[in-house]
Every structure is written in C-alpha cells, then in structure tokens.
Image 1 (cartoon, rainbow, N blue to C red):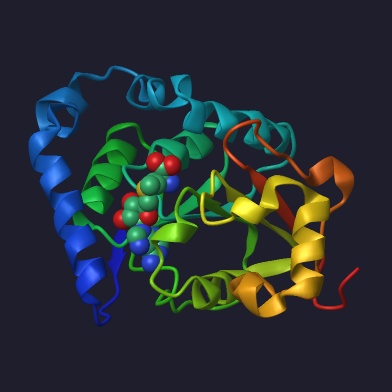
Image 2: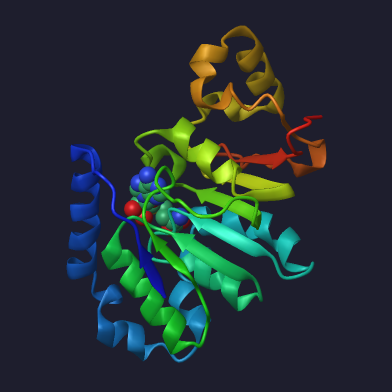
Length: 229
Ligand SMILES: C[S@@+](CC[C@H](N)C(=O)[O-])C[C@H]1O[C@@H](n2cnc3c(N)ncnc32)[C@H](O)[C@@H]1O
C-alpha cells in the first residue's frame, strides 16, 4: 500500500524527483518485464548487495536479523532493495520515499512476493504520522538528499520508540565522522557547524554500536532516549 502525502517541493527536490522518474523509464532492470522475470525476491536485490553500498548495509543490519521482528522505517528507500531485504528477513518495514515512481516499483515487488509493506510517498521532513512507533529508523545514503536534514532527523527521531535506534549509514554528508573522537571534538568545538546534529545532545554511541566503513564513512548512532547517556 502506498500512502501519499502532499507537500510543497523545492526546485531542487522537484528536479530530483524528475530524475528518479527518468531512471524508471531508462533502466530496463526496472521495467515490468524485468521485475516480473524474478522468481524469488532476493533476485531483485542481490546485485545491490554485491556492491560496497549494499555490503555495508548487510554487514550492519545482520545484527538486527538475529533478534525479534522489528518495525523499521527505511527512509529514502529508493527502489526498495533494502526495504525488501528487511521484509524478507521477517521485519515489518515501512519505506519512506518521495519518488512516486520508485514507490510503485517497491509496491509491485512487495505484492508480487507477498510482502506487506506500508510505503509512505513523502520526504523525511514531511512524514506526518503518530510518533514513538518504530524500533529502527534507517537513513541509508539518503540524509544528504534531504532539503532540511535537521528537520528530517528530528522528525524521524520522534517516530522512534523509547530505546529505538537511529541508523545513519553510507552518509557522505558526515565527513567529520571519520572517527567517533573526531565527531565529539567537532560537536564540542563547533556545534553550529555540526549543525543538524548539534541538537542531538542525547545521542550516544556504545563503542560496539559504532561502525565505520573503511572508505564509506559509515556511522551508526544509537539513540538512548530523551534522558541521554
Ligand atoms: C542515494 S538514494 C538511496 C536509496 C536507498 N536508500 C539505497 O540505498 O539504494 C537517495 C534516496 O533518497 C530519496 N530522497 C530524496 N529526498 C528525500 C527526503 N527529503 N526524504 C527522504 N528521502 C529522500 C531519493 O528519492 C532517493 O530515492
């Protein structure tokens, strides 16, 4: 099911949505015949997980696959490889994706393989649903696409259950996150420059929960709740 939200689009965002629509037209792997040629859901996303972006995702998300089924918001879900992977691993997944063309692909694949996904066709900044309902919110290579990343993070943070976790992966917007120390120093010395993240005084990272990819600048943030750590 795709739930559409109306919102005003900036010129940059409208251009990005037009580019997404163009990808759906030009990439034959996304055409209906190609999608329908898959006989198992993992065939749809296996290529994605063979490249660094996907490998990083799997490496981190494996930890979540061994536990109970989670309610997961996959923010900026693109063509849905990660959402469908998570659904295939038993989680209850809610992709957030502003490109309606991409949402339709996700919905097509979910229906075809009998996965029940609620897809929010909107941005992280504009998603307006009841708060405190997700165990995990993921930005995978998507935070830097947001017009207002601080608002996006704040909005998504408010949707987490107490003890929920926020995962920011494959994020080139965070070059100063090369090390945890680097981030903390940056935050202390120049909170305004850290900008979007400075307001998150209550974020903390148990060492074991911080994952840095060697080249991708991966960051995993663990949200410990409003009391902070
Ligand atoms: C680089 S793609 C990453 C897609 C997917 N997470 C993946 O790993 O393949 C970034 C996605 O973010 C979406 N996006 C753009 N602006 C957004 C916003 N404000 N909120 C949420 N997603 C957004 C784009 O439509 C695009 O699908």
